[in-house]
Length: 181
Image (cartoon, rainbow, N blue to C red):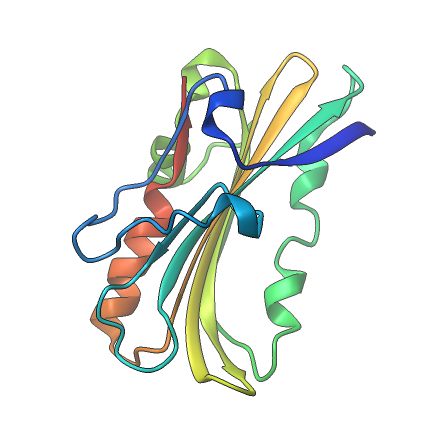
């Protein structure tokens, strides 16, 4: 059971780094991310529509009982997206630490060899936003644990583009999100 949980918005409070492979020229980092409750926020320089295509990073720190099974963080993780208006799922992957996982999800999650990686989930699809119209979104969750401290990293990309190449590019960015250190 989680004793405490809190959003992390200041990189100086994390042992290690949160990394994402993103083209900084096309996706500059928004300096207001922390004030919005995000660890990181990248906004497309030239969005295709009025909707601001974005990639966000959310990091949550949990202090847990030492005997907790961290995989509980992934139960029903896909439910939030599936509740979106007219959700059309394109892909869902879930990997537990003790399973023989999809090699790419594990490699992207990192940290397996040090015993810190606890699981990952990736989900993508489209939904209709009442204000912005049809949007594509891809989200990856990865959990890392050291002793009784667990970090849950969420990386979500959202775009108004209807181009599959843009979707593939954003899914690759989301897949690249990882904790190192």
